[in-house]
Length: 315
Image (cartoon, rainbow, N blue to C red; front, side):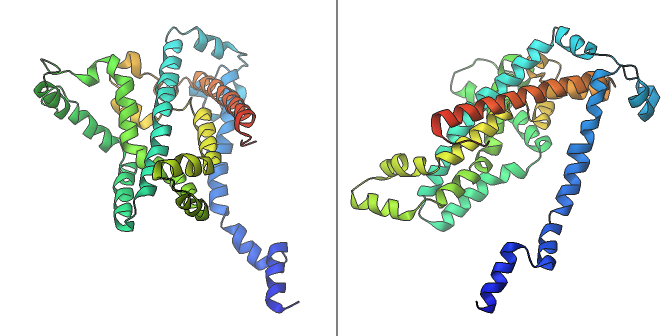
């Protein structure tokens, strides 16, 4: 066996401890952050089952009396809980039904651009909003929708669709659509990254064979590209289903005001208000447990359905 071959084999088998240590040490910062911000906070879930008094400080986590499921009963008995659950599921479900097909379609369109420079330009422009904070981007959206000379009202009035300006941010019936389409506008380009990468990995010989058969662009998209990225689409759908209980807190909180609270109060904003502004950590932990259990159930259900229908899944 040659020296180079022995070296490669030693790397594969993990014999070179120095190299392996260097590689594994790259994971160290990420592992530390994961433990600090994702594993350690799990200990706080015990507060969901205790009558915790914040004046007792950290000591109270251990000395507070056991409260059983009382925090859960208080939450489920809250007349606003059903409204928050409907808002959370409604915004995410409709948003995913619109965003996922559009992201796939947009990735297919980007793939059809032949000029590499123009393709890079389109990708850069569409990715850019992702890096703008919701404080800034939300401010732009609210300015466009302003009832006092906002761009949207001016267009609608010139087209004769409305007679007087609409105060979009103060009318609850518009909130879901504002949240969904503003998120789509900000994240559409970024959502296409994985689909674009999957499309780039499709065997080019399939397209060449289709060219010989006289297939057009649409037929190649439908019969080659989409089936080839089916596994990626399935995984993204499973992730979307698992995250259906998570709203974009920054976005919702920026758009939320007392006038649209009826349709803008979601579970994430409720946890923030109950936990950090009212200092009821037990109730906030109980809501988090409910949300996590439901998300795990949805993940397992989506994975099972995916395996049954497409033979692809995460687990």
